[in-house]
Length: 237
Image (cartoon, rainbow, N blue to C red):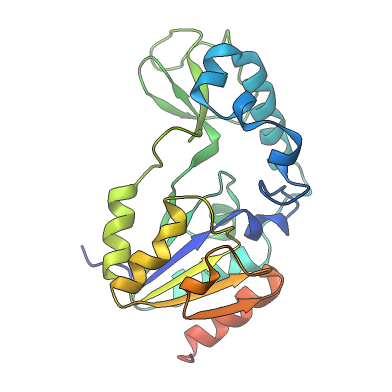
């Protein structure tokens, strides 16, 4: 299968303008909640009820009527629909805003909040309601093993082989709304550059890895992403 000519990496910054919290901003999620308490396998083994409470609240927030895809999400869906060379969006986000905007060739490397996974049989299922410790797996019937289908600290991100292949074959790599300090995603720009790709950072402000990009543009995602996509689709640089 031919690699997509454009690979896009998105982080929490693209969804912040849709009303969702980021993680690493001074007022972000990890400034209010300890990672060790809610986002590690050890936390889930120690206090699954607390972990469920944290993710249940985030799921309810995502499903709230006020959370909608913004112009940056919609611009990426347009890019996929109109680009002749193919587009892959790799997102670090666990929300479903890319899908709701219309993106189809999408890889959630950190999992999906609106899915659950059974620790016993590994089955994955859609999940829009609260998870509890007592909930039985719809596939195997075992109770006590249902967890959010998200990648916790200390776990391996999803789809790394497919991501590596896409980065090795792409012509353009765009990072949007990322902090540049979470690996392996922070290293994708270097992989793309080695493969000869044009590399662009679109962000509210310079990320920790901004110097690795050949081009950088800064401002609100809902403004700069649609403008850049317009340029790209018109063949501009």
